Amino acid sequence: MKCNSATTAVLAIVCNTQLVACWEGKDEGGTCEEACSRLHKEPEHLRDETVCGLTYLGMTPAEGEASCLYFCDAAMQNEDGEARENYENNLQSGYHEEGDPKNREEIELWIACVMDTDCILLADGFCSPHY
Image (cartoon, rainbow, N blue to C red):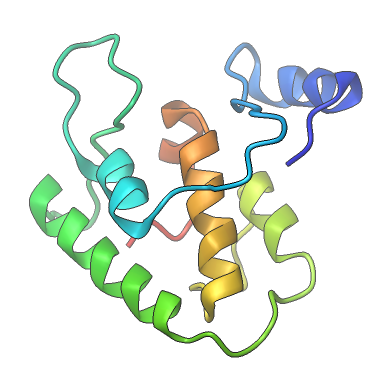
């Protein structure tokens, strides 16, 4: 996502004071391991925002991370196809009716979204699914 003053203003209104981190010019979004770790590992202290400690469906953080890695790696192996129309915009808006990433291009967009989004927004459903 490219950031500009209009983007920041809209995010400020939508998110109250919690903004999506904008890393202009970031070429590489990360890896499955980095994204899944960011989502599910427990923070070592309250101000640690490098990891979010999200849990779903009664899974432990370790189970959530393992599930995430399984689905992420599977999508990464499927190189065929381009991202579906509006896939990136839907990830960043919290709208996720399209479901799981289906191919390498979509999983790379998903990873970038997870790596660039504040934990509070991730907990609210941004960049879903989180597995």
